[in-house]
Image (tube, rainbow, N blue to C red; front, top):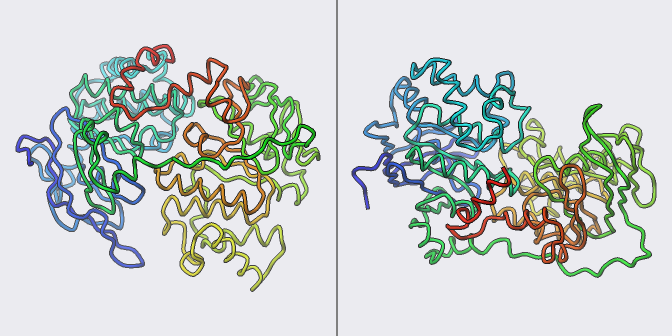
Length: 542
């Protein structure tokens, strides 16, 4: 039912995109009311139109897109077709936007407090001294550590969770009436996510700000939203109050979102005690500077055909361990062995065969694929480099790999990365790793940026590929539901040290270390009251 007093009103909003293949209907007649102080959660899989809807609520659309009809009215101001000066004034003072990637959204050459103060001073809302004082108050409200000093750091000098909260602070600097949060906690580990969610919810409530909270994580939206709107293919599937939606979703598609992540790894017998591991990391200590120690005497094994998940919060050393194994960061001490053979610590000193046997799949497929190359060329390069294939034999092998990663060769061979969805790009990343015919693959947060349905498909693909190719995985993740879905063995890391390791069943069901128990307790649940129950725990974490 329409609310005449709503702060934001969208009516029959339609957005089209123009591409090489013609017109794409991105938003197909969206109707939406958002009241002052209300939080509306918007969920759906990749390509549903969630982010486009958030931008449209600001009267903005990306290059190559156009509004095809409808209305977007903010507090009596029609945004569609409004003059740039009107839109600029609203966006910088009354409507704010918090992007998914904080690291990509800050100016790396400016301190955090300079970026906070820019708009309030520019718009004449306060002078520089008052803006700095205000920044410290908002930093404190968002539970940033050392709020009087942290603003004088540069973006690269704070953690991902701290940077995400600094961006939220910057969005609140002009005390907007509406904030659009676009996947603000997607790439954060579970303990950091609690801090950010709690801080955002507290600040939104205290300021009485309306918000669109865009996410693919149902447990997260349950903590943040008063109402939930489910989108698919640019349309609204259903909408209801949060508790109603969680307890009794009406549509089959909504129910399918609730049912994802039910996959489990096939049961595998433990390797015999006298079987040598395929990958062996022993007594490794490493760091990035003379006084930095990111890894402290760590060691673990990965047996043939098995998956070892390495988990821990940001800064625990997970990705540093991967860099050591890949030869990108020579350790100060310790060694890495593959199939009993000592690997040179620097990849440049490894043989071509040693390079071939260890491959990586990266977290952000968007930045891991060359945007100027076609998909067939991206996969062909390692095939040519390692197997020496040329001509027809090379093309046929590329077609086989595309089929293995469930991408139709005739459809995708000549496409560019820009023409693929996030899940399809990640499949190409998997295919590029498989093209080398490796024995061991490092999967670095490969599902963290994907919605739950696409992530489930990627995990299922990785399991099948592991079985078909006889691969071993090191799976770096902060998502414990992913650990349940794919891991045979688990290593838990904290501050560069291993605090606990064992089989996945043992670690997930009978954790021994306090830190492991905290990680498990920090996984959001499908309960709107869950975050409130964690507040005392959050205070101890922060």
